[in-house]
Image (cartoon, rainbow, N blue to C red):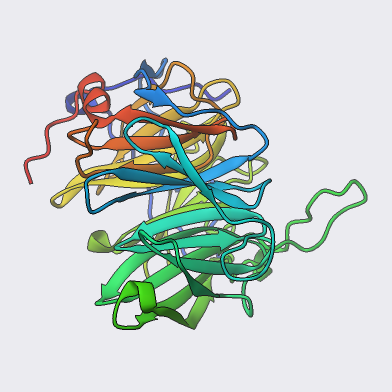
Length: 377
């Protein structure tokens, strides 16, 4: 029986022993390769949501990303999988500002949009059923082109790293399957065929301004460990930490484990996994709060009743606390907006609520309840 974690103030956090002895290609699922159990386990803390957006069940909202306008407003983009569009929310109030797109394959249209990411003035959207990543200029939302159709089979999530002026490294999770069984359920490929779970692209913008740019993308290869411990069975959420050379990937195959796997940014499995002794529901969204060289990984446990958000220390991966909202449940994507907004002077955590909309948490409330030290970087 797996129990839920108790909130531990940072000063009293119990260290997790993360064994890195597993090797790529022949790691096992023995307890030695899992994080050691936390000594004291109990209920998460409660942090009240700052707001809930309007709920639109027909949209099937999945993932979120935010952007700050020139006049200081905050936009939050939500992917609407069922209606093939983006929903744009006000990041300070939750008000729906507009929608973008409709069903189709032309630029500016979508088929099953899922992952979304904002970096600089560039918005990127993964489309599962168009097998591509599409780009848009901000704030105009002018389409800039797309890439990935030659390699992507069933893409879901993405993480983007800045590689230089108008140049980016884009990592896309690809949950391709080996077909369906008689009941219509996906058949997981054998481990040996999971070596292309993450696709990587070198992306640049060609143009004098972003509004006039066109996306140029070069496929930079694929990776995925094929050992028992490091294999990525069911993938969607991923997030990187270039300063520490890490890429975290959520394992969503609940028949195997609810956990996070630690790769390096070059695609090599580190031998580390964590979270399996803590999470009893699906591992989902990932984000990173940075404070100089320190900070916290924010992760999601996607329970149907109430979502639990877990924090792990950035470097050691020690579990330092967990919280829930009053209402937010069944969360897929999360997005941490670390810079100040009009309503949230120390930033906000945005989270999908039950496929229907999104909520916001004031970072000040999270930090106070979990007794996190102030960031002085």
